Length: 463
Image 1 (cartoon, rainbow, N blue to C red):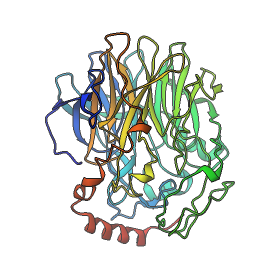
Image 2 (tube, helix red, strand yellow; image 1 turned 120 degrees about the horizontal axis):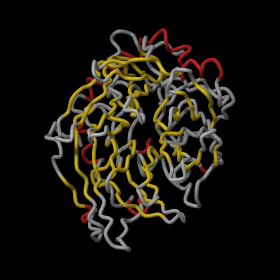
Image 3 (tube, rainbow, N blue to C red; image 1 turned 180 degrees about the vertical axis):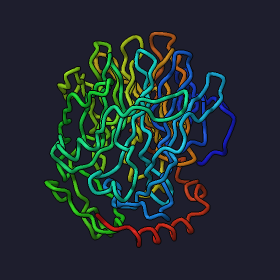
């Protein structure tokens, strides 16, 4: 469902017509920016303008700057300078503040990029840009030639350039490997409190605490593994390309199913992806979970300023699927964002071809653990990052797709004590089939891209 570039704030979608279900509350979705490459996290300045990171679309691989992706069945991950920091004005304008930032993405579709990952202001109005990664810096660095990845920078917004380097998470992972598993780093989201940045890393499976004055990383803590009996895991039936070695200490997975000839490695890693400050001053962290992304197993954590981790924050702290964002409203209600309502491999082939329903949902969790799905699909797809502001939720829509990403606003109608609930995602799966019908038409150049993929695969040297 690739949209053409359209005017900002183009349309509003009423939630009253989710495939024939009864009208719920009058929440509405508005598109603030469109045609983006892998949009991610963002922040508001004092005037209400939004500074949004886009992780780019990587490179085309012709320069040889490619490595096998460690998290996507070793499909080529190619580097380019296609990431950016954007400013979305209150008047709907879109301005590139910093262009040509380092980016890695899967070929041939430019999907699931790593690059500019988050941007936040501190209390003094200084801006900080977090750069993601998607691999082992100790081996991929010389090939990719992307020295800014895996770091936090203070940003010069006036001149539109990266400023002082605040922290180097990639090097710390290489030297110390805090979680004791594979050496991979991917700083994904952050929040700032006082003079410190708290960064969740979906590759290293940790939370970092770093001082903003440049004195470096102060503390780090690893999130607990996500144990699931392998007999409960569901695997794709397609055969992955290339060799799939299990990581150090990772148990081998069960056969992926009839018609496949290789096992998939299981790591049980947490993969934290979202962080926000909670009403009590601590932090709430969401996790994505590991391949094959077991449904209903993603958890929420409470983390204090010293990085002590509590596994679940309420009796509603688990049972989610692939979380990529958290936010609180002024009443202390927690909102969590499900990137997809079912395991991602069911909907997107490794490499980026959409083959199924990639609907996202936003779930409200009250202090007593009561859950209410306030938005489900209906234009919200593969979303990442969540912010609450003045009665509305903001998120990056189609956050893992090149040229199709959006920044969207979901206005909430909080009137009344008993708003009608939207059906939970699990009850909607039989109705939400909107993506599959148009999947092939999204990629008119599919055959040529597949040929390009084969060409790049021939060039990639497996690390």
